[in-house]
Length: 127
Ligand code: FES
Image (tube, rainbow, N blue to C red; front, side, top):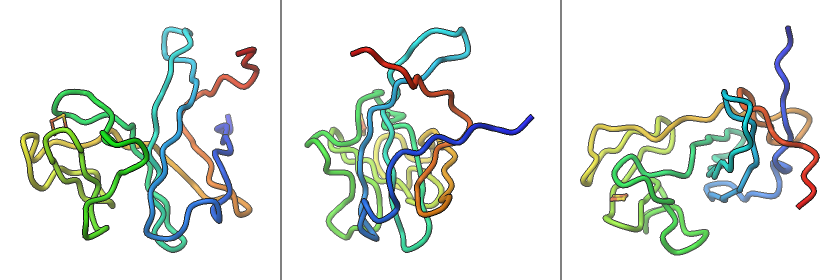
């Protein structure tokens, strides 16, 4: 059975070495709708996706909305207590949840679009 890929945005919508947040609506394993915050980091042609949820207290990383990277631009930052995460692995390298990981989300670039795999998105929202 082929896996469904859902387009999130165009690769060109995120400048290289920048991160952007998304709020997805997904169907969870119980078949119920659930909101799923996602952060996508683009690095050249590569993209990395994580659930936007700090392993420390479960809050969004962008304490200041849309601000995901530290001053060096090399690591993801949780704005609440300053944990830093490696962009390529999601591993916390410093801060109160050192050694823990962000939840990885599978992404792939298909025909110039960033697509998410492994999640079922709600496509017909009447919001
Ligand atoms: S909630 Fe993220 S470091 Fe504490």
